[in-house]
Image (tube, rainbow, N blue to C red; front, top):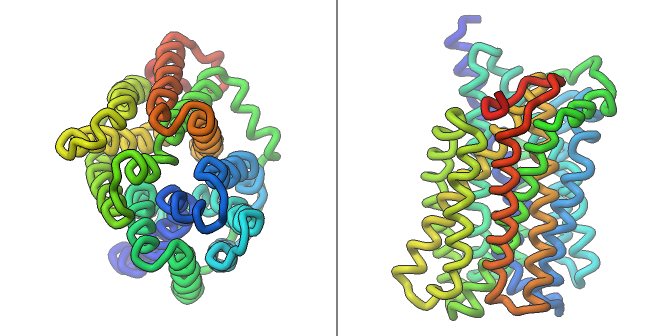
Length: 399
């Protein structure tokens, strides 16, 4: 088989992996836009509903590295199809959940398998195309994941406003079933790894202060972002006075400018991973502080949300690449550790934001978020002066 014919045959499975990645990651993030309506329907406060974000994120953070290492032995088609079937089941359960407890269980199921899919999809894409096309394959899979983080929330919000939040979850269940069937028929059989080092041995990489410092930095960055972002829809509804449809379109615009941020982050992170983190953290902190004061001024609100959207999307990319660079001796494990650190931050951010709402009011969430972002900036400056003991190759700033 020629290289060109192999490329033509391999492109469809990778496109489907990217599409499946969109559904998988949308399942995690869609709830942010549904919190106000879901809280009302389930009879709980928005801050308590925000704990569903924490549950999902903490589960991903804890089980990610060990499950990924364990499941890497399994044949890939069977693994991905099973994962999507579990997502279909969990989203159907969420769509029919009669109370908060059942909803919490429905959110726990996909959180267990999300990091496995996320960590192994790119590796599988490279196995399909061959190492000579690794960059293109990874970028194609990553596009579905990035698109989910940018557009999953606004699409879910618009669907929920038009048909109800339960239909948003039901739609994800149907999409999961469709993509499971497509992967079953299109994805080639790819065997898992026959042998791999024990999980505890691989995690020894965290003894390097550079690696552990970068994971901690991702935790702080995401905690700061999601202290406010988890409750952005509620801020726009309650403090801005926008209806659900308008909030959905605002979040769509937020996601649209995020594409610019994704591009900028990719350009700047190779020059200076820590410098890029600081460069995008500072404006997002300012935007979070300014959101409530300008929420009634449409022009200023658009500007503030544009800055926030660009910086947030950039930080998704910057954080992922930054941790992988710090763990260059085992970049795949670095990616898994970043997933864990980021999701731990997402869960903490939802908790912090909820506590601030309960204790001080919704209008103070931006200040709390900016404070956490300030800690991440301080941590980035500390990392710039930290040298690696040589366990793994350090980031350029550590030289």
